[in-house]
Image (tube, rainbow, N blue to C red; front, side):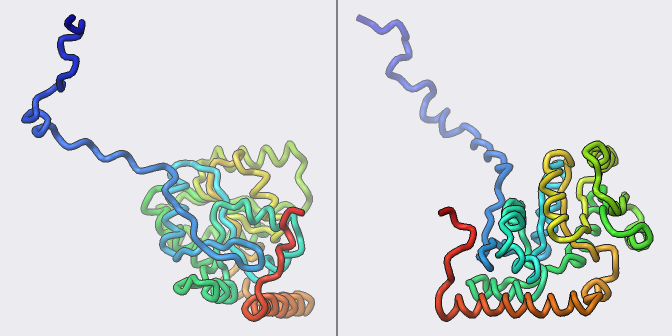
Length: 272
């Protein structure tokens, strides 16, 4: 009995016709093509990446209006995160965690990332501003006092005349939920694709994680001195701050040397 389909068992096209078919189009690139590589420094994963690649990744996320978090880690906040589970979780939830000073970059090189260099926040900010101007993206600055923020916006407009830049100073009192929602809507309605955040470490990480999804932009935590010149923001303002920095660096290098000679201690943040 013949099969009801006359073409059953036979190829649909001839060999010659099959050879003359055009090559199939390449599949579109995956939306999630970024593969994170890095090293653990004081129980915190730091991404191994160079300055240009980090700025380009932020530019790509911003062009897609993705709500992302970029954290810049220094010795101070890594030492605090090693003893503060809330801060550690906030940093761990970031989409990109960068070594912001030479000590953290050195620790990463000791862990196998031989080419890793420090990525200071101001260098990353100015590199991205140049790319944002070329791409026609808008940026927003949140934090600092009104005078310092005005000086920063003036400098940015002078350096990048075609760049759309806005800003909101940090509040001197905690926001109510309604005020906080209004601030997020104001930033979003302004069309900013990247938001540079300049608050204290713990407050800054909490603020960015709280507004993930509310602000459709890449949020980059630069610390409370982001609106000041780089040389001024790097200097400790008080004797107490200087003493705290020295103590944190001593703890940091003690942990690194202990890991080098005695092995890494158990993580404080592992589940029981």
